[in-house]
Length: 353
Image (cartoon, rainbow, N blue to C red):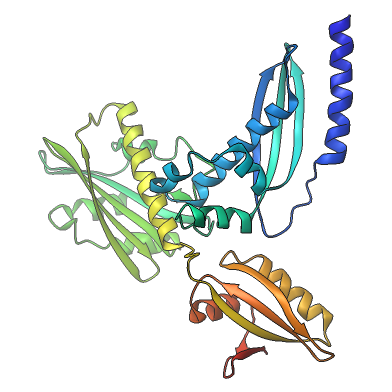
């Protein structure tokens, strides 16, 4: 009876805590990490705060996987709970349940972008813009012993690539359909496979980003040649791995995981935010149109490369914004042009047209 009464009081207190201390109203300048699931046995020493703290740590680790390169993860392994909590802007309890004396919690945690970037800067780590993108992915196993190309259904890399989907990955992979015409076209290219551009196949999928992966199967090591196309730009990557059994699904999955990390790091590098570059800009905005300045601030809030902005001064005609940008003036102009904003940059103070 005492146990049930204590349990009842616990949930009443928990409900009050949720009502007063958590929120799902997230500012645009925040990283929202959702679906953080944690659980703990509900015993006499149960501590709700400790469980939520465990959720904060899990959310931070999940954010880091998306935000920084795999080679930098070890630099943030030692993040203390106090450091993590100082970056938390808000949190919300999405779901809670009590099953078989175990308390289950589903959290959504919002991290302040400016504080996260500041923390990473102290660790000498550059974050990436979290840009999710779809790539056409064509993996081909080159069997040098049998002088054969394994392309679709007889290629375990192709068959297993999308079996395990990781929501933390920025790249979504689209694999080509088993087209007989494409199959014959690729087969003819065995002697020239390293130089073949695959353009006839790529154009069918209407994607401007693609990865062609040639996996050379030999007696000693596996050599991987990756041809990455981003628009008209072509990048070549060479990697090598220990020999594996190509009939062993577990070993194939391990190779797939390694390749996905390589491609994720490439994509992150391509969109890196150099927080050491702090370009100060003064921008003049018409003060007579309040909607204009409000929308301008909203756009600034949603650009990761802007580390901060403030109103420098104002008068009856204009508002003067001081903007700190992590990049070059050309980069800023191009990003803002994509948002339909153009500037007169002839003077020190730029004028929003």
